[in-house]
Image 1 (cartoon, rainbow, N blue to C red):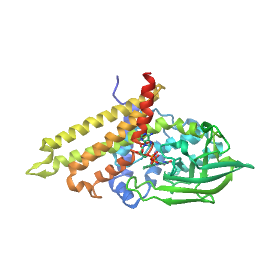
Image 2: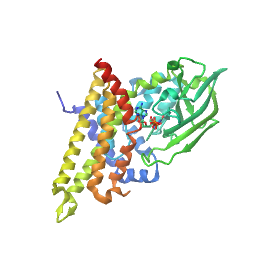
Image 3: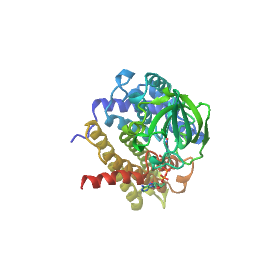
Image 4: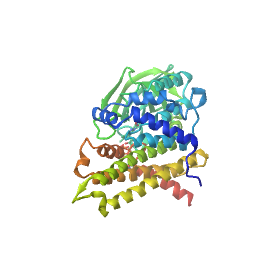
Length: 380
Ligand SMILES: Cc1cc2nc3c(=O)[nH]c(=O)nc-3n(C[C@H](O)[C@H](O)[C@H](O)COP(=O)(O)OP(=O)(O)OC[C@H]3O[C@@H](n4cnc5c(N)ncnc54)[C@H](O)[C@@H]3O)c2cc1C
């Protein structure tokens, strides 16, 4: 078993380090968080340096890249303290590149190359969270047009995005498995309105309710095949869980590094607090959790690269990574003492942002729902 990095991976990571130092210092991230702004200039710099084309197919100017390398990069960006800094755009674009029309592909890639967020993903509804089958937003096809009616909620980056990748039900289809389709809806379409939700996590991404009140568009807004929406969405879910896990790993490593440095220099009772065994116990258990998350993430990525079936692995990985990473940040905050809960201390932001990952991409409990069923099935 080889745990080493390849020369290419070392090279990529060291050029990413240089870019992060230049374009994404802590002062920049803290300012974005404080003012609830997206990291647009950083995204643009990543694009210009070629990082954003990694993982994209060659015919779209990209460079096919293995999953292990992509999670290494996502981990590294988040280790800088930036939430969701790399990987999710690629995932989103993949939905369009795989299933979209030529016009949709050109439009989305053009936006990406400008450092913009091309679309927000809209599947959650007030009455349909974990239970997607309860989705009530409708898409009615008529005379070459399609009319949408319904409400979506908790939609990340809705205000930053030009489009909404909307999941909606075709009410005339009786078979529930073939009743959900995927559409690319302009956020400025007449009848579409938003209400921003004030949340305590992920300040660099807005979250919105989206109201669709008889929004009517040409049928060309359909992405892929009518009735295949759910299947299309699921196609990249395993990789999404992996990218979220790598994000959690990077943020937790950042919290750990801050806490360990603080423990080495903060003096109480005449000694650095890192001299106390209770603090060393925390740091030791945090280091073990980080090692476990890292192994889980890298091995899951490796399985993907080998085209081996993931079965319950993606859900197990996301559940463990999101929960363990939050526990690491929580202990990091404890090591900082009272100053850890103040806005000026980075660990408070990492703690908040990691909490959000226990919901986004599927909750801790839904990961059990997915993995648990698979485990029982495998042993039946
Ligand atoms: C930061 C953030 C970003 C998000 N971004 C997006 C986005 O971009 N697009 C989008 O469409 N959605 C997004 N969501 C929504 C997210 O996908 C949902 O919050 C999630 O699917 C859970 O749905 P819910 O909040 O309605 O909770 P519910 O489904 O109502 O669940 C409530 C509680 O019950 C538990 N529960 C539910 N069913 C079961 C079960 N069968 N067994 C055991 N426990 C269960 C849940 O785990 C949870 O603890 C985001 C959420 C957050 C917090």
